[in-house]
Amino acid sequence: MDDRTRTVGDEALDPFFFREAKRPNEEKQAPQGPAAHTRPRRGPPLRTAVLVALAALIAFATYRFVTTERPPTGGRLRDVGAQPIGAATIALGDIKVTVGGLGAVTPLANVTVKTQINGQLIEVAFKEGQIVKKGDFLAQIDSRPYQLAESQYEGQLAHDQGLLDQALIDMTRYETLLKQNSIARQQAEDQRYLVKQTEGSVKSDQALIDGQKLNLAYARIVSPIDGRVGLRLVDAGNFVQTTDPGIAVLTQLQPISVIFIVPEDEIPAIMEQMKVGTPLEVAIYDRADVHQLAVGKVTTIDNQIDTTTGTVKIRAEFDNLDDKLFPNQFVKARLLIKLLSSVVTAPLTAIQRGVTGAYVYVIGADNTVSARNVELGPQDNGKVAVATGLAPGDRVVVDGADRLHDGSRVFVAVSDSVAAGGSGLAGPGEAERGGESGPQTKPPGAR
Image (cartoon, rainbow, N blue to C red; front, side, top):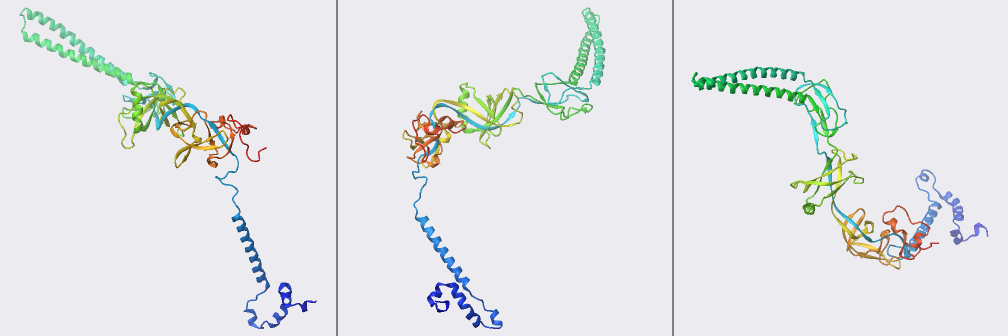
């Protein structure tokens, strides 16, 4: 049967034949002239595109139906086998009850060295940053004008002293003549008053001399404290006056203090310890609260609370032999209020939070976990005191708790010592041993 004798059904099954067979007739019946360019031409490609799109839609619907009806193979609350976790053993330990606060390093003595007399600064004997002792020579002011003034007052003193000596001799003579009734009593009394006046002049002259000696002492400037010299404020050759800002600044570094603030709610506990004479220990850390810089003792507490912040200032003193504390340095202080000894402690990483409060996952002997509520106390260095809920020897989950629920099977992938503060995973075979709590279940597919 050739192509011309095919039936209509056969043509429908062969779209390519249909297209080839119909093309001559369509070309013969197509309108001629301008109308041929205005009508859109429809061809078999449009039908083919519709069929392809329909097939793709059917395939996509089938895929969605299969994947939607497939039962889930996993989930947090489904038992998918033993979960790897990190574990730690509960034990007794010490917890430091501390209160933290921001503070600044404050020198016990901070002195601005200034001149006490006017004059030319002829010598600067210190170097910037030099460590000096009390009494060390720092600077010299021209003392010649004060030496001349001292000599002048000494001459005045000698003159007045001679007048006093003469007045004393005359007074002795007049008193003798008065006893003999050889002179009038008034003349003898006048002489006694003259002696007192001359004595006053002598004392005044001596005071002027002492004043110049003091100026000469001020001309030589020495260190009033032990400390470190800052940057020089004036150079030699300048005329300095008592109204000037100063010559240099001295700061005491050893010992040194830190003034920090604590909330007013902590005052009763702090005052209770101070009343019994217990020295309060203070640890100082850098501004990032990472590195410990020094450890010292509280010396005093301010006498009032700052009403704008609700805090009180505390001063602590430190030896600072290693010079880690620098004046005006911002630091963080941790004040030790008391020490809780031999209490049940747990790692902070083991504590979970839920609707019922704090809880932990306790590992049972059958390698399953159970959630247990706990009552927590103070925290210290990655540990927390547990008042109720745990006992020494209990093993808790410290890593991987987000994948667990009551009854989940687990195996220990991190040893107790590592979970308590180490830095590596368990060695080969250690995960299968599971620590000291007996044999552990291997994960699915483990060899």
